[in-house]
Length: 464
Image 1 (cartoon, rainbow, N blue to C red):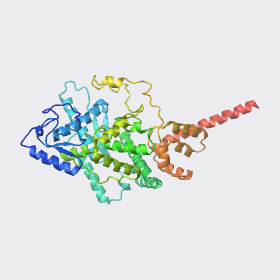
Image 2: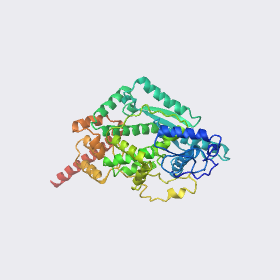
Image 3: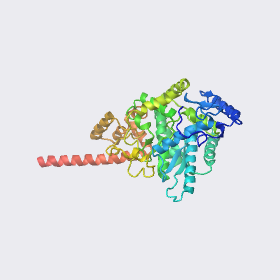
Image 4: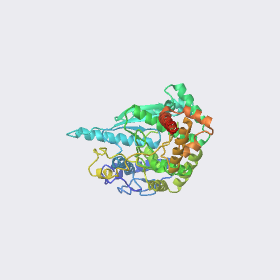
């Protein structure tokens, strides 16, 4: 595993464990215990970076690193992703999506440390010209669809609260939002509509993808209502590798590049992925070594295609963990969309001068976002989907025709129920944040069609 940070031994990257003979045995025991618990890890007798005698671990089949260097390597990857892609500006408030798993737990720890460092720099600065970014945490509560006892659910949510509150400083607020709240602010009505909509989806994979779409909608709702500028996800290389294969199987190859980039601005609140270069094994091991508490009691098991792909990736990981990186790197070669970067208009003024040219050299034509997105999953439309949409617009007689035409092929076949009547009822249950946009389009379409018909009648009258 190549080190992302360039610090030498004895600096910020290596602590006393790298060369201290007194604590070498204790560190070796801790690393071996963590390796045994996490599994699929290799052990060596010395650190390949600092040369210390402590036990070293290597997840991706590269150099063995001691605990301090291993942590510095992951933190370096995180910082590099954040700074080189302008993910966070000093004036931003960032909403971290927290699930309780190792990936989001490490993301929470790292962004917290970056903020603490920024506060220290601000305190010692003479001018104190730049503010320090804010961090909020959001947890989407999906327990309404969970069969676990209520007391276990409440205990798990309380654990998540305690994990966030254990951070000394830096968290602006903790938001716990029920998934059904995107349907209605009234609890009973929202729960009824959510359950009914989910029950109408016959495909296991479609049901799972639908819940993922609702999860993103919930995060967007929290961010918009509370003034956040970015949403930070804990999606790591392993999760993205699973998504790459799943999307390929589902026929979502055209929209795939949109989902594997560091930055995604197609949403109302942009989404960033700072852990894209870290493996799930690495993040799990770091939680073990640093005793970072996680809470995964509320995780839902995967089903359908997503479950099969996850099992396949797991087998690949056991053979060679670096294959997950290979899958992600292959997907990254696909051409990204225009919304996979921030606009250069004043956005990068806070960046160091050495990084600014990287973002300012862009084609102004490409910076204009003009993609048509799926009503539910947000996938950009392919050419065939655009042709179908244009054709439907001209001959659509009902609002439901426009609704279905604004869904990508994957959502159409895996999520939408069969039959026009069922579709009408299904769309009546969906959150207004989705259907409200379509209502505006439908009203504009009806007005335009009426104007055209009126014009044609007038032309016929004049001809007579």
